[in-house]
View 1 (cartoon, helix red, strand yellow):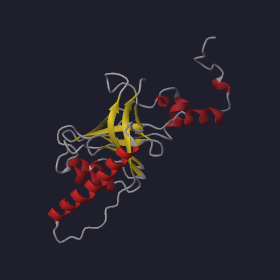
View 2 (cartoon, rainbow, N blue to C red):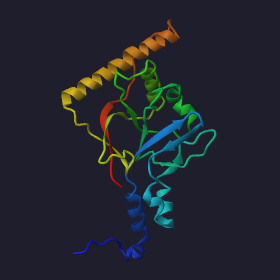
View 3 (cartoon, rainbow, N blue to C red):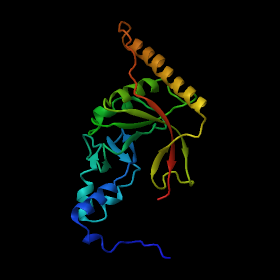
Length: 225
């Protein structure tokens, strides 16, 4: 039996039902956002949601969900993002790591005030730069409405091209004791290294307890389109 690839009677459905179908097609995504400090702009590998391209009706309904976000003082953004559905993923820059621009991300980029889903890279101690833990802590604190932070620990790709398809965050394959130990090490790193950095900035300041949202380990998967 042939598989149907279209539904010719879709336009005959009641308007309310069609709009509900369009809205239901807006699924959760991981939107990878890179800040280019040299040019003062944001870019992303995330594809534009398909529902924005189907027809005028679908686009109008989808624009109730997705907004152009992450513009800067120099560039308007073309990155579509849903604060309710999507996760903002700020990957580690390859050369300087999470440097000063990561710490200043919210002040440099618009439309970040209501982010509730955040992902950043876990940085192994063997490659971590001395300033990264402090900058990552300040970055996390810049999002007051974040419920939990996903720590991305690795890549599982179905092909050699890691930018094929859509980015998904999945549960890591490591065992539970190993995952729990890694999270404890990360929390200890945040506390001690951030305390040392604050002491360097102001030796008379009292160190308040760190306020971290729950940390959740995830692996990075690129799915086929």
